[in-house]
Length: 138
Image (cartoon, rainbow, N blue to C red):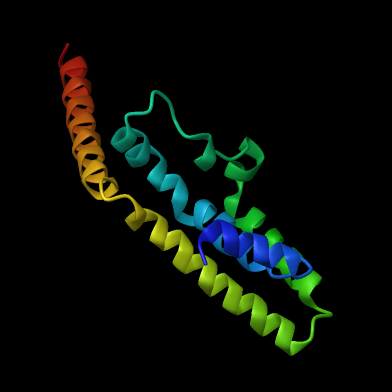
């Protein structure tokens, strides 16, 4: 199934399987997705930062504590689940992870565009460093 269909199926089975999708997507963004914001914006030629990878200041202030609180909530919600349901949620998370990874291979042009974004990012870093050095000399 495609990602959207997988999420719809998970929702139609009572919603508990959506925990696997939440876990995969949200934690991916919290842990490393924010590092993809600039290269993605540059690769796609977008005019501003992606809100998708932006978190409220309260989260950014102590991301570790925020992540731990989400883990605690997931554990609290799943305490009463039978082993089979927990196993199904873990399997759903694995499937969601695969779908999220597949997103980066769906468009044939995405990889070259990501390369262009990486080059643009590198040029920006070099230009920024050169500009900073020149300003320090003045």
